[in-house]
Structures are given as structure tokens and as C-alpha cells.
Length: 89
Ligand SMILES: [Zn+2]
Image (cartoon, rainbow, N blue to C red; front, side):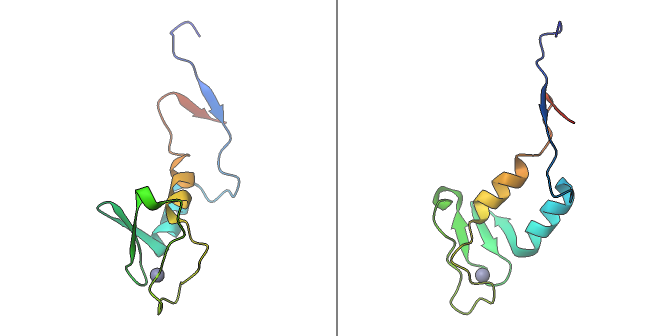
């Protein structure tokens, strides 16, 4: 392009929920509190620097699951936040 801005094309999220709805669904289970992502059920938190570790819920949490990686889930959603040089097709 002659204006020096290179446009990249991405496909939108495949599940068709849309970015805002994906964030709403995420927020049902997790919330940001300072440097922590916390479970809405047990309020246990995990730092972003611990993102590669499975999330440790309280033993009594009804959402306890050893396969929760909420930072990765959030990162996947935020990947689709539009930036100035990206055009969705
Ligand atoms: Zn929990």
C-alpha cells in the first residue's frame, strides 16, 4: 500500500459468538483483580506469570478442574481485539 501501512487480514473467531459475547462468557467464571485472574466461585487467584500452571481452585469449589488455564483462555479471546492495522474479513 502506498500509505506505508500494511494491512493484515484475520478470520473472525470460528464459533461465531463474537468477541463481546466471548468476554461475557469468560467473565461468568473469571475476573481480573490486580495482577490476578480469580475464579468467580471460590475467589482463588492466579498471577499472569503462573499462566502455564493449571489453576488451583479451593477444594470446595464447584468449578474445581485440573485443566483450567484461564490466562490462556483470556489471551485467546483478546487475540481478536481489533487493532488499527488489522482488518477482519
Ligand atoms: Zn474456583
